[in-house]
Amino acid sequence: MKVKHRVPRPSVGFSLIEVLLGIALIGIAMLGLAQLFVMSVWSNHRSEQISTATFFGQQEMDHLRTLTAAELQTLQTNFVDENLDVNNDGAADYRRITQISSPQQSLWTARVLVFPPSMIDKEANVLFANPLANRVLSDMYSVIYR
Image (cartoon, rainbow, N blue to C red; front, side, top):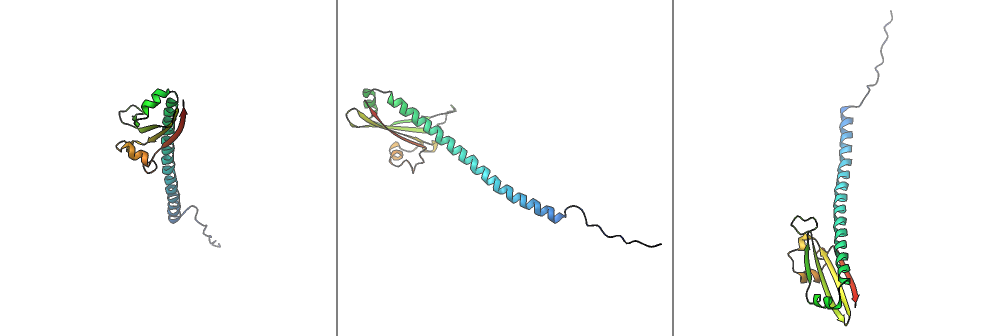
């Protein structure tokens, strides 16, 4: 009888090194995606803040446009400074500062700035002097004629 030699077949499957290398590559890719996810969440939060601040600024401008000349004259002396609590939790979510001035008879200029709650403790004059340095979320300017 003749003895047949068996030819070894190549092993089927992955080696431990190949599996570990694959897991490492997937892990690196997932870290990049996680960072992208965190940045998108931050960006969405920031855009929501700006949208809400713009709404509050526009709301105040609409209110100012309904006022009479006498009411605008009384508002022109000081800043109108208010803290806005959006979700009624007792903590201010935005700070809205309005300034009315009258450069000529029957003409008023209105400027509304909306800031994040971190700017609640600062003086209104400081915020108005340099809104960009104080992280303004919305800056609106309008002319009202009566």
